[in-house]
Structures are given as structure tokens and as C-alpha cells.
Length: 180
Image 1 (cartoon, rainbow, N blue to C red):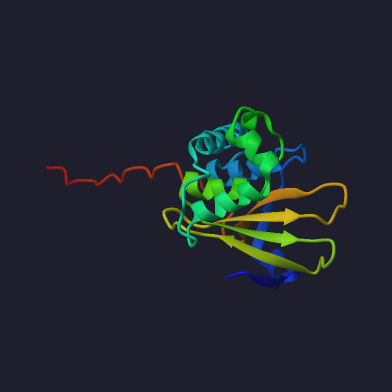
Image 2 (cartoon, rainbow, N blue to C red):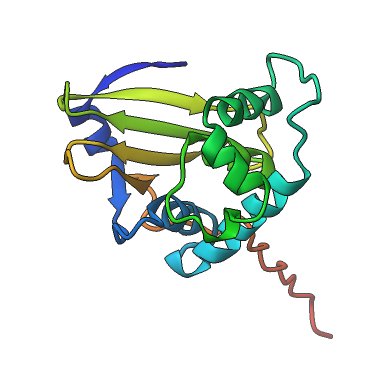
């Protein structure tokens, strides 16, 4: 459900997890949401890059799929596509919307992006990237309020105190038996 939401609503409902603005912000944010730390950003980038190397730009995907969405995004940004689908992908710094779609496919998750633009800083434009429900939905903030930089940050619902790595298995429960 795309739409517009006042910034006051999102700011009250979510906690933004800050990350450095060194060009890796999208991968830091995804790492925070997936692993609970920014230190796995290279792992996230590498998995997306490996996915791109196998992704077919020539296949006909159904229009209601994330594969089709990704194909269109990559065709729209030919330079990024060339770099990600060939040799340079692992060395690129910044990420784009196609990388978010690829992350949804790689990690079998849904991602909702809250876009905040300079033209109307009092509201977010909501962009859901959905297609899988294998994991809980992850949230990203995309901020272009500073005209010199664009920045992605992870967001977690305010009721959750910290991101829970979705790849961590739950510990087995121990049942105590009666002693004789």
C-alpha cells in the first residue's frame, strides 16, 4: 500500500538506527535489520552481488513478481546493472532501489521504505517492496533532506527495543522432568 504518512506518525512509531554516511548506508541498514549489527554489511552486499550474477535480464517474469520489478529497475539503471551483474558489483559503494528489491529476494523478506524528500519534509512517501512473507517485514528510511547526500537508515518499531537477527535460531526449550 503506497501512500503518504506524516513524519510525526512515523517518528513516533519507529526508532531510527543510525549508521555512517560513507556510501555503504543501505548495506549497513540491511545488516542492522538482518544481523543486529552493521558489521555484516559486506556479507549482505556479497549475497546480493552473487544473486545479481545469476539473475536473468532476458527471462520473461510475471508482472506481479519481485523478479519482474527487479528486472525493470535494472533495465532503468543500465550503469548499475552493468556493474552489479558483471565484475564491479562487490566494489560499488552506494545502493539503489534495485538492491532493496534484490535483498527481498535473497533474504525472502518484505521491505517497506519510508522516503523523506526535500520538497515535502513533513511527510514520508511509503514504498512497500513485498512478495514474500517468510520473515517479518523490515523497514528502511530514505532521506534526501540534505541536498548533498542521500541516506538509508534502518528503522524498527518503537515497541521493539533492538533489532532481532532473523537468522538466529531460537534456543531449544529445556523441559524439566521429575526426579525420582
